[in-house]
Image (cartoon, rainbow, N blue to C red):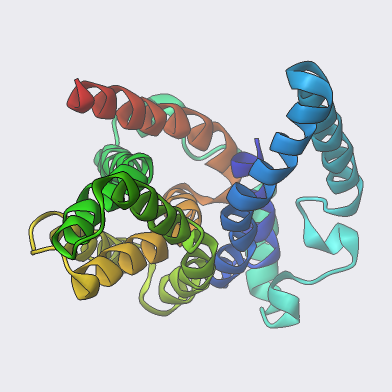
Length: 277
């Protein structure tokens, strides 16, 4: 739900600066992975899954109501000007016309559009890689670290525990690297355009995969692998939404993204599940 409404609001408030706006806004997406897990763990221990889901659901509804009244899609209704007043009156009039006019894209037309499928498949594969790396990060670090510890003379009964502790520390670096990655992704989107920024993000994943899967494991290749992966993960959330918004505009974004998210989710879960078999 947030991925449908929030980007539309940011595009309306920052029509020519949506890349930077989404980059900063997506910081919360990366921090939430760490913060929400801690809160949910405490709530589960306190009240079980039932109370935990009720609390999270109620908080989501309350926050949605607050956003409904405080952040209308048209920024002028909240007393703001698009782009903080940096846009011209002609640009603001064009935005109002786009938002209030008839729908330009129907879902039937979108499904026939080559760009739609290129974006969905491309980002769906990137999300699949991201999910796979995250799930396998701790086992990978353990499997690589244990032989080094054994070779250095560490007893076998201690090596696994030491490797697991080190792997856990690597995972805690996710927010540290992902937050600047989100900001950088937004800046890059704004600077060179969404398409080029998306390609550069893919190159970052390739560098990470080469260091983690093909080059010999050592402290240098491991740092590059982890840093590049977490850094690129930080720009995942905002880049794909920005790309869809750039293609189809804020007026048609909600309907199109609702279908797009399903396609990417299927690619991520189904294809990755088959690769694990």
